[in-house]
Amino acid sequence: MKPTAATMLPGRPRARRTWWATVALLLLAPAAAAQPARRIAPNPLNEYLGTYEYQRQYGGSLQLLPKDSLLVAVIDEAEYPVRRLRRDLFLNGQGDTIPFRRDAAGAVAGFVERGTFYKRLSGTTAKAPASMYARRLPDGRRPRYAYQPPATVADGLLTASLAAGGLSPAPLQAMVQALIDEREYPNVHSVLIWHRGKLVLEEYFYGYDRQQLHQLRSASKSFVSALVGAAVQRQAIQSEQDRLLPYFKYPGYANADARKQDWTVRDFLTMRTGLDCNDNDGGKSAGNEEKMYPQADWVKFVLDLPLTSPPGAAGSYCSGAVAVLGKTVENATGQPLPQFAETSLFKPLGIVNYRWNYRLDNTNPTVAQLYLTPRDFLKFGVLYLQRGQWAGQQVLPAAWVEKSWGKYSQLGSKSYGYFWWHQQFQVNGQTVEARMATGNGGQKLYVLPALDAVVVFTGGNYNAARDTPPNELMPKYVLPALLAAKK
Image 1 (cartoon, rainbow, N blue to C red):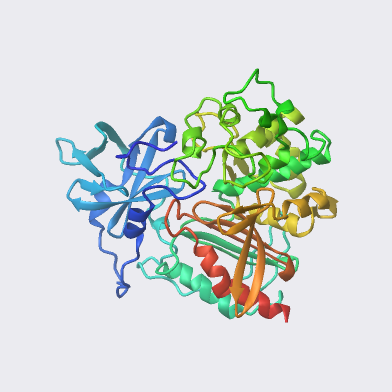
Image 2 (cartoon, rainbow, N blue to C red; image 1 turned 30 degrees about the vertical axis):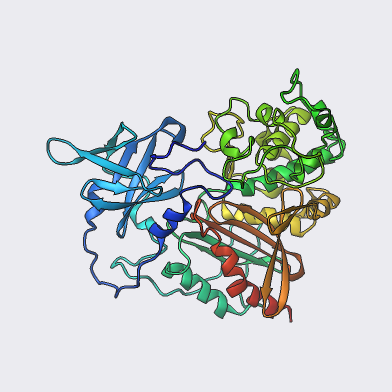
């Protein structure tokens, strides 16, 4: 749900860019590099550091932490910068002012937003101030990167060094150093590379580590696609050609149209619903996701939308289609989607640490997204690279993986499969094809069949105009190393 214009935060987790992104980009632009100091001077913004009350739909609180000359609001990992105009007056991403109030002793007591006062609950934060930076030494300097092979842990992923995996360390070391430096590629939280059966690079930044869950945003859609395939494998859904509406028991639908009876599961998997639903139209369509999130029943809201084209014809990126298919799987299997995922997908992959609140209504602040560790996100890509196999078990039908990677819709400049994207990179005159699960902020899973590789990035560039550092890092650093290893 998008808050009204003067909010400190720009909106709920979204699949795409929001209206505040341009200003936020300007606020986030890195300053010119200064000579590193041996001692860190106290940041004058430290007096605002703390945990504050906030709107209930955002969990009831937020954290404010200084980062250089900006004050950053943090909620559910996402960071939203505000710029100081003068003492106790700040400017948010859309250009609205946020005044702070002080108590009788002169201490910061809270801030005001759209006439509502949100008090300061404490002067501490769960998020460590040091984690606002990629990596820093105790004296404030950025460290020089020294490669270490990934650790071997009991999670089913084999590991090796870059050299043992046939990869030149130099370009990948340069990439990690660039991420540490933050100047060109800020807010990348992790990067992992799996090559020829082994995890060969695993690096974390901004306080993240291999145990910490990370929100996947719209990359969660690809998991819903997999669960549709698992339901087909178990014949809970006969095939993706099944008519969709028989899986629901609603007594009727608004905007009655006989063509809705022709909907198939596949129409929703390929974003060819024909509905007046487009998340990339600036909120104009009746089914834009920002209009869905306030609804008491997201699925009914979507199915009630008017048709603007025949089902199965034109593609249009509609997050509501994912809600409909998630509920289809629940109705077909008789299980909540996370429970079905546990037995059919997560347990076979050895995924035990995850969070998935799949409540499809306006009481869900996570917007039904999945939270995984980057290693487990990587496993999902390896499963698809191996045509549905993991540790000798056929977890998903190989035919489903192939169908998922078909090209059925054209969404913007990219082809689209069953909640999977096709991404092309140009590297030294060569075209490299990737299958991609992607989410707002830089959550990227690249599966590269021709290079026997899977690459994962997670990040915090939420709703930013430049939310694609991974799409820049891949052709500059990662793919040259992988292509050289192929020769």
